[in-house]
Amino acid sequence: MALTIVIHSKDAAKEAPELALTFDSTRIAIGRSKSCDLWLPDPSVAKRHASIRREDGKTLLLDEGSINGVTVDKVKLAPHTPWTLVEGSWVRVGRLWLEIRMAGGIASTQAEVRRVALALTKRDLEKNQEPSVAALEFVGPDSSAHERLYLHDQGREYVLGRGRDGDLALSDELASRRHAAISWRGDGWSVRDLGSKRGSFLRTMRDPEGPPLEVPLDGEPRLWRTGELLRIGTTLLQLLDPVTEALEESLAATELKMHREELREPPPALRSPGKADAFGDESSESNEPGEARQTSRDGDGSGDDSGDDSGDDSGDDSGDDSGDDSHPDAGTGAQKPHSAVSLDALVVLVALGLLAVSLGALSWLLR
Image (cartoon, rainbow, N blue to C red):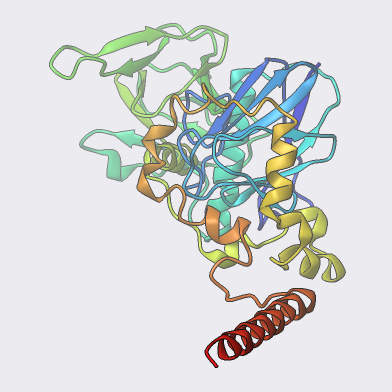
């Protein structure tokens, strides 16, 4: 059965499109790495943060030893301990919340996984008021004489050539009037040739010491990757995409430890004024470690093969916060219940009575 995961970020606008991916595999790796099935480009997420697996008809979630841990609804999980997910479960991974839907569907492609990661990265750039619009720039000694072409609209195609009706006019005599076109295909900007006489080529430096490798383009869009140059005649163009660059930087960064206040933030479904306070109360019975352990035993309690790749980011701090949040009474000097205090007092009185009787008997014998 397929599993759909909806990704929610804290500062996403209400009108923002839903970011969801569907998986039909028996194991789903979640983290900030291209080797994972679900990429979450946020520094609060570990390279391999968590995993979901299907066993005996159950959907089990494991924290792979991340620094910031994994929370299901109100419960922070113990590392490498299975937890059974159900329809509508909310899972916190770093600063992001994942909504679990057990509905079926067609499995998402790798391109769709990348599309969601780029959308999350763009949201983060816009939240911080950083540039998020891609642009085409001329490369060469006279590049400063040309203006950039900014690609504001991802829903249209940008035409390059010598024609005046194009979006970027080229003075190159070897260029056709309508030479090449740039468009957004969901997982990045792509380029295709428009049937030009002399062709369009993507140049890449795979070997820094060798000559550049040029790939000829045809009428099918080809992903324009970071570092590649587009050659049209003698003209070279480069793509400047701050979203792609920020995504690559995020995937390469080290895991950032979250503040305690961030760890207590509720999922989007509980952010109404009446519900948020209930979630943030660490004394809630749902946060008691005993309940977490019992529920996790409903899985298989093994977790023996779940931490193979978690060593990248877990470090020695992986358990710093788990004890603080999952044991709300630890180190607080909590008082004993009144019944326990009354029982202790009764025991003391009985002991004193026995001691008095013993002393009286000893005095009588010594007469």
